[in-house]
Amino acid sequence: MVNNIRDIDQDKIARKRTLAVLVDHRAARIIFVVFLVIAYLILGFFSLVFPLAPLVFFTLLLSLPAMLIVLTGKTAKEFILALQLTSLTGLLFGLGLAAALTF
Image (cartoon, rainbow, N blue to C red; front, side):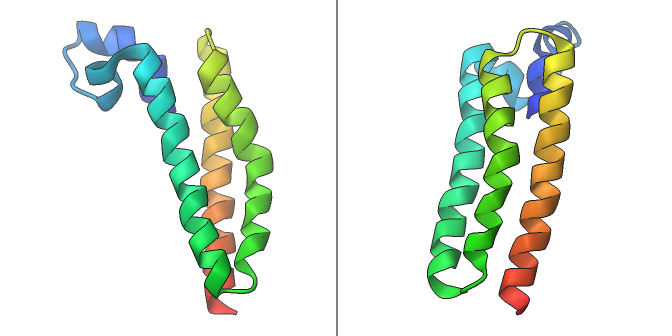
């Protein structure tokens, strides 16, 4: 989603139909944040059942700056940083949750 937000104007010209193009700049930024928040709400459910799952909340240390950058970012360089943070967050979230469910 971050990459699509960065490319909204070019994608409109190329007639690409990404979610970010369909909803435009402001809504795409909000949807990105909502997607991340939903992941942590689901993690909250898993935390009730699996004792190690709350440790995955440490990935918020990466996702909160990414959310802030996406909400306030103006340059492509900022969105690339948000993309990198989001990718790392997704990797650590997935590995952490898999470990919590396994052990």
